[in-house]
Length: 156
Image (cartoon, rainbow, N blue to C red; front, side, top):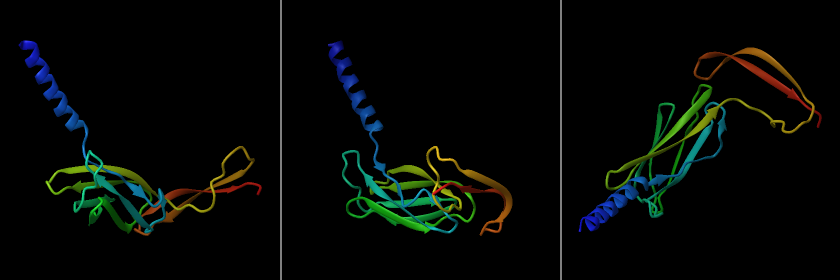
């Protein structure tokens, strides 16, 4: 009898732990990973229950650099937020908070980088020349930074 009770309690514990481990999720997709200042950033994804069903009509809040974009998921759990990239160089965390109809909140996050870039990044073992020049740069936010400008030249 004790063994039967022990097995029963063990099964209940496993079911509870299985439910805790399998949480609702929200995927995160960016239209790019590197942005210029004030570029349009489009964060989208899908919020789903553990069984894979989309979570409809849930509140989604996307926060990047202190700015929040709020939206609601559609009938399939898809969400979309469009906002401007921060006005200062750096790596930012985009936090996604989804609150479903029962009031449960779950989160996800990704990184986005604000830095001016232009042209291709050379790949491989081609000979190339790199010139580095320290400069002062005033960001659109008004902040002045010391940056290193790299000019890479390689045969075409």
